Image 1 (cartoon, rainbow, N blue to C red):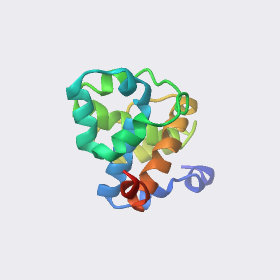
Image 2: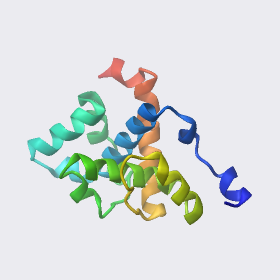
Image 3: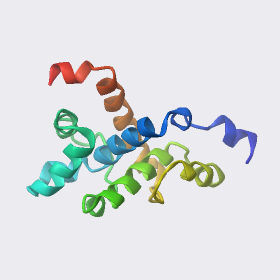
Image 4: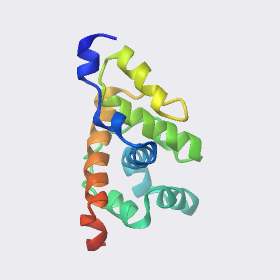
Length: 145
């Protein structure tokens, strides 16, 4: 791995696995924002609410349209827990950009094989997820919900 790849390592690599997993769940939910807004499938909404909490799901649904680029894998990811986890991992890896060696190394941080997400599309979901995650972690949005 090149020094530039090491320098680009992401902060969540140093986090405990549980916290990193929770961020990945927020990343998957953010990637599914447009689909979640249009769905009437209670099972899909319940799956996401179980993973990130109802107040966080409400915040995802209330986010501005167009904030997150459409991600083709999002529809299928709402079908089961493993696909949802793989989507979240793929979105977080989009933060690594087009650094295949770094992406391969960081993939080892996840229990499932991350989906390959276009970094340009995934980055918007990663940023939206990080902001929402940090706000909920700080308790700022839960108090408002």
